[in-house]
Length: 253
Ligand SMILES: NC(=O)c1ccc[n+]([C@@H]2O[C@H](COP(=O)([O-])OP(=O)(O)OC[C@H]3O[C@@H](n4cnc5c(N)ncnc54)[C@H](OP(=O)(O)O)[C@@H]3O)[C@@H](O)[C@H]2O)c1
Image (cartoon, rainbow, N blue to C red):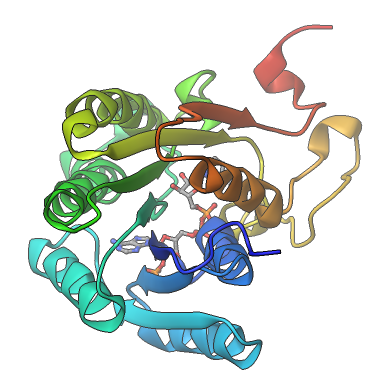
């Protein structure tokens, strides 16, 4: 039986850690040719070597998603290696926790640059490439957050970017139709990554209370595979995936 993403060419940003690493590895296991992007090339190189040693096909490209030239080079490298781009996962992101009255303009701009301008630059390049290639089209998956629905305290910059990503996904879905470009968004809840490691969690699964459960990054990766494995005419537009006991999100009771 062929794999779900057999021979699809996928670019994953933020692939050196957490969700992006798991999405890249899971895509490769499902037969995709994966281009892993992030700033730390040496970390990416270890991950691509591990994928390739298991029979997968992966390539690392150092890229800062906030830089136009890096993004253009990333797509050029993907096309040079694999001929086209079928899937782009806009996953690179930074968390932020600062009381609103202490947020400097510089800090605000830094969070927006990675979490919002990055996906804009990536999506603009993706549409250019997907529109021009034959067969035309492809998929753009944005990684949002449950913060788009229920924010954490002191996270104004982060929450604002995740709300904006929802709008970008909506716009891309409409504007991409004429070129066969399909856009979707995944809103994860607490997932093991450097975000949770900073809060003392280094393993997925149960914590001290039922509400402290942390998902494995592979749980989120499975949703991305599902989205990307659907027929080109079908869009799983939005998915919210979270620990079932995440009461801070679901509410009282
Ligand atoms: N973990 C959660 O609970 C959770 C929940 C909801 C949403 N999310 C979202 O999931 C996404 C991934 O986060 P994560 O939790 O996996 O965090 P992570 O482990 O810190 O990974 C973040 C990734 O982004 C990359 N990155 C940061 N700035 C970049 C830049 N300017 N250019 C290119 N890459 C950059 C980092 O790589 P380099 O440092 O090598 O560049 C790293 O690979 C984010 O969008 C986050 O908002 C996470």
